[in-house]
Each structure stands twice: as C-alpha cells, then as structure tokens.
Amino acid sequence: MVSNFLNGMTLLLVYQLVGEVSTRVLHLPVPGPVLGMMLLFITLLLRKRVEPVVEPAASALLSHLSLLFVPAGVGVMVHAGRMGDAWLPIIAALVVGTLITLAVTALVMQAMQRLLGKGAARES
Image (cartoon, rainbow, N blue to C red; front, side):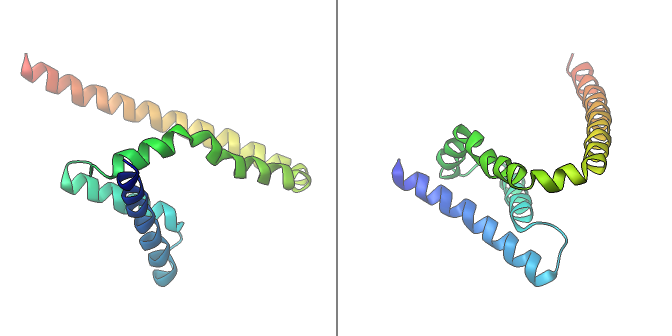
C-alpha cells in the first residue's frame, strides 16, 4: 500500500515537473502544474483507464484537499492591505467571473442533456 502511494505520488510529481519544465522552456503563459495536469488528463484519456498506482495517491490528496487551501488563505491575509486598495477591480472580477462560470456551466449542462437525451432515445 505504501509503495503504491509513493509510486503514485512520484508519477503525479513527474507530470507536474514535465509541465513546469515545458512552460519554462517554451515560455508558455500557463502555470506548469496546470500543463502537467492537462498532460496527465490526456494520458488518462488515451489509455482509457487510471493507473492502479495513481488511485491511492489521488485519494490521499483528495481526502486532504482542504489543507491545500491554507496557503491561499494565508496569502489573502498577508496582502489584505493591497486587496483593500484594489477592492473595486477585485469585486468586479469576482462578479464577472462568477457570471461567466454560471453561464458556461448552464450551456455545458444543456449540451450534455441534449447529448445524453439523444443517446437514451436511441437505446430505447
């Protein structure tokens, strides 16, 4: 169990490293971990299965997901003064971002319902 966890964490960190190196070498405007996660996602899609060693590591990370928000909370507290100075653009970005997210989510949900509805009609 421990070796599967370590192997899974190593694999996840290798994808993150590849993403980080790629963004720095190619001067991409995407954070390295995001590119690494995209590469992992593409690998999972191509292989059509999750590697058995990834599941224990992913489950452990997901069970402690709330801890990953602590650095962001600390950053907000450390830069509270700067955020107070720029409160209007921050509020505007939050409101516009939320509205865009809601609209995109609704459109994706409608598209999936149409797609799944057509598939269910064919199977009946």
